[in-house]
Image (cartoon, rainbow, N blue to C red; front, side):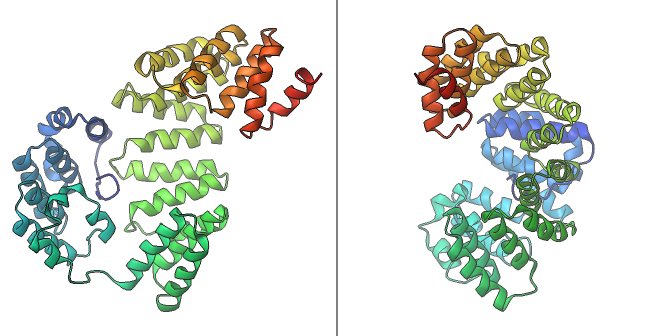
Amino acid sequence: MIVCVPAIIAGQGTYDEILRAVSLSERGEADEAATLLAGTGAISSDAGMLLVRGDIFLKAGRINDARRDFTLAENLQHGSGIYGLARCAAAEGDARAATAWLETHLKSPQRKSEPEILLDDSFKSLSSSAEWKSLWKKDWYKGYERKSWEIEQYLKANRTDMGVATWEDLKAVYPDMPVTDYCEARILMSRGKFSDAAGILAKLTADAEVPALWNYTLAEAYAGAGNYYAAATTYGKLIDAGYPDPQLLIDRSRMLVRAGDRDAARRDLGRYLAIDPDDTGALGLIGKIYAEEGAIFEALPYLNTNIDKHPGEASAYSLRGDAWMAARTWDKATEDYSMSLDLNPEDGTANLNMGIALINSGKAEEACYYLRKAKAMGEKDATQYLAKYCIR
């Protein structure tokens, strides 16, 4: 739903309500999410919001409500609701209606990719039906689409060489297609050439009609190149467009922290925690921001809540350990790192910090075990401590 809905949502209040519902739905609380959005009047006049609510209704098993929203979306924006109507029919086990809707969808410019459709669990029950098999006897996609999917699979499998070979075939036949440039940027990123990739993607995404995925990729390229403010701005572009992805606020806040704008990062995290007050990533990050500024008493409420809400998360303890480290409260830091390492003993950074905290607690001999382990896991900073405290 997040990758494909072309939502343009007006008003921060309505947008945040959509994000809250999406967050609930992703946590498996689709019924609560559906109830939250059921009475939202502004949704009825926005095709993008109707698609989001329709998906949530469908996930909650409210098929008739979902069908109504997808139909309303289709009436507002031709082609937008067809895929959702196919999913509704599939949920009712009507293979004939589902494939008929899908065929109409596949003939439209808004069609989803073949991999995305085939991996959609909504159609799993139809995969052995005669109607489904008949639908896929026809090749619905262009050569450049298939080549782009093939390149993506090679890159995910770390077979950049094969991806390059396929891209060269793509470029030979479709040299002027935007997707050819996009695939080139993805290949450059796989080789660590993030600045070059960002240059290509920035030009491609100047067109407002490009897939949202391309803006996500641009933000990733900017981050890889160390241009964190540009990455934050790119995430902001998706937020301003009302794209229904709660993670965007956290992603932007992470980039803002790296860019040095901690106040803006805190605002994003505060906004996100109003949407999902229990999220471990947001609680940990805002606590870390305060701790790194030396504001330990401002950090602790967030970090304590994170542990209370997520006692099985190793990172919740290590983040509070980091805060105690920043406050030079070594004994409490070792307690939290010990808990973190009980849950995840292979965390190199937690092992390193545990060793440093023990040294500062006057327990250098105990620290050596953790420092050696940290070094074995690639923590280069462990070497100087080992040389000073652990070599006799």
